[in-house]
Amino acid sequence: MALQIENISFGYDKNKKILNNISLSVNQGEVLGILGPNGTGKTTFIKCINHILSPDSGEILFDGQKLDNMTPKDIAKIIAYVPQYTGDFFAMNVIDAVMMGRLPYTQNQYSHQDRTIVFNILRQMQLENFAFRSIKAMSGGERQRVFIARALAQQPQCIILDEPTSSLDLHNQLFILQTITDLAKAGNISVIMTIHDLNLAAMFCDKILMLKDSHIFAYGITEDVLTEININAMYNVKTNVTMADGHKHIRLIK
Image (tube, rainbow, N blue to C red; front, side, top):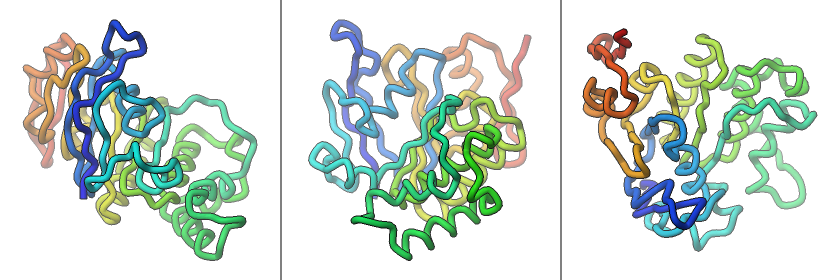
């Protein structure tokens, strides 16, 4: 099974396309990192995939079925979305926030199965000691774990994350990316994430999509895409790219 993006185009202004004819597929268990300078349409692209925005043209399909023909509840069983950290939250405790991920499956109330799923996810995300704490009283890294746990509670086929490591310290960056990619591999869940840190992208992404000037600039296996030539063309910076420990390392050159 795969998530297929076919010829997606979108513009906030009809005279200017933010995205122009974007096509690719993401297989189950695969991690796709989306790279590009600010303003290149990364967030717009993932919002189109998740149907937060409606593309001007093109189609999103999962296992050959068009998402356009599905209800929001059915889409929520396929795709879970974790937006950028903003700092604005409702005053609710962790367990209630994560339990919201079960809404696509509930009738009038949460079942024993819903609670079992949520408790297991809290343990996986090391949140069991925070279950009854208000998310307003948590650090940025802890909150991000809550939002990812809520996404996992949807039991989706694909998780989309918008800059999941933004504003986090090094420990939480590594913890969150390692945890989400491990769970994705174990559960055969595809992951799509926008990310700015090239070294983290090299460590955790199977494939990379580079967006530039509303088009795909480069797309493919991470080792093939993260080259000095591509990085210079994308960001107008010089780098030294080396291979060690099984993945690429990118070092800026003054």
